Length: 112
Image (cartoon, rainbow, N blue to C red; front, side):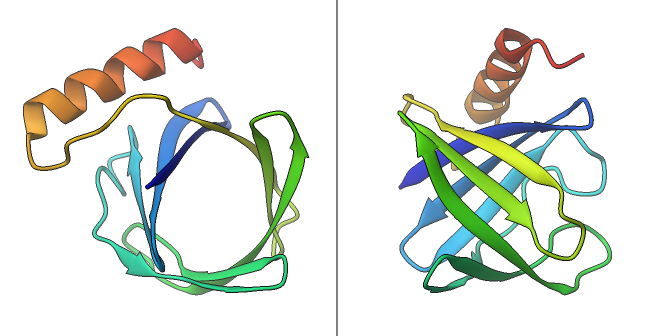
């Protein structure tokens, strides 16, 4: 499972990839931990359903920009996010353990 993290406008989020699906965890009340959603990758473009209360289809360009760095650009808004791997193994089935780790990674990122 590829796992990446980002800070969006001061809000910490993590995105997890597994085969043809992805899910998001966020400190946002709108998202928290999403369900797995199917994605489609065509060339350098990732097609997915957005997360949160208002779902919509979206497209993002993904680009390798350096050692362990991936840039994700939301095509509709031109917002760019820097994504980096998380080296930990995560267990989504153990909620308290997962959220403790999430908070620790968020605090280490110093996005507040």
